[in-house]
Image (cartoon, rainbow, N blue to C red; front, side):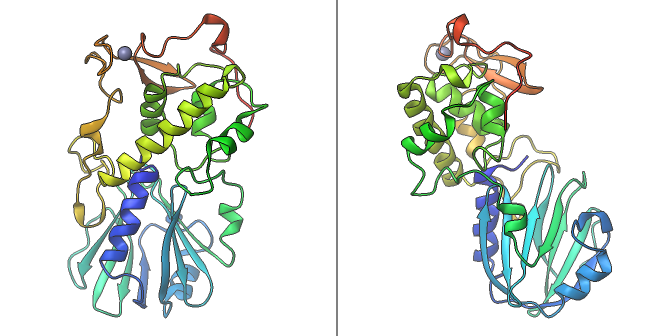
Amino acid sequence: MPELPEVETVVNDLRDAGLVGRRVVKARVHWPRMIATSSAKQFSRAMEGQQFAELSRRAKYIVASLSNGQGLLIHLRMTGNLRFRDSGTPRDPHEHVVLLLDDDRELRYRDPRKFGRWYLLDDVQEKLGGLGPEPLAPGFTADRLRRIISGRRGILKPLLLNQAFIAGLGNIYVDEALWDAGLHPQRSAESLSDDDVGALYRAIRKVLRRGVRSLGASLGKAQTNFYSVGGRRGRAQDGFKVFRRTGEPCPRCKTPIERTVIAQRGTHLCPVCQVADVGKLAPPQAGWRA
Ligand SMILES: [Zn+2]
């Protein structure tokens, strides 16, 4: 699933491809459930004539500001992908939303698993207002992380996956950040020392920055893997230390990386670098509070 670095890459690529300033001539929706905020027909009518005024990212959402003041949010979920095609190019059966632009290109949304969603909103805060801080924003400091983590209970990994706690992290970059910080994913949030949170802060920023620089992660070669605009693959997977490296030696201590399941998510860790006192581990069945 695309996480912060992958969505950031898509937004940069859409901008580089000249989407800002383009006007939508015609909008066609081939899978109505993809539009979360209205009927497909209402969506198409509302989009026609709109110009893309600005593009940005918030958490794992692509955010497009439109010339009429509305906001278009796209969440790629598992297998969503955007591409440009010349108008008239035959439609791939997995392309579910097609926007014909005023330069005769079509912006096409392809999504084999169909979990992605489009939201057309008068006020995007309706969807974005409840999200946690952006970990790469200048205002996100180690002290800020200490403040939001203090008083939290339960298992560390699902807390970091919770978008209302911190925005943009998913299974990949949480596993990488916890390895980098030397923290066991089953640690209880309340057992973290100030130094632990400092290490976690630096690790989160490091793995996300590296992910953005590498243009995201494209694992495997299947059509359902992450590709940015135009089918470009990312390279972040080449630098992963633990994610999907089960059995390979830990880059720090050479112990084979292990895979386990924590909070229903496949989790990769080094059993030596990320060891924790039993007293600091949350019980496996412990929940977490949002
Ligand atoms: Zn290790």
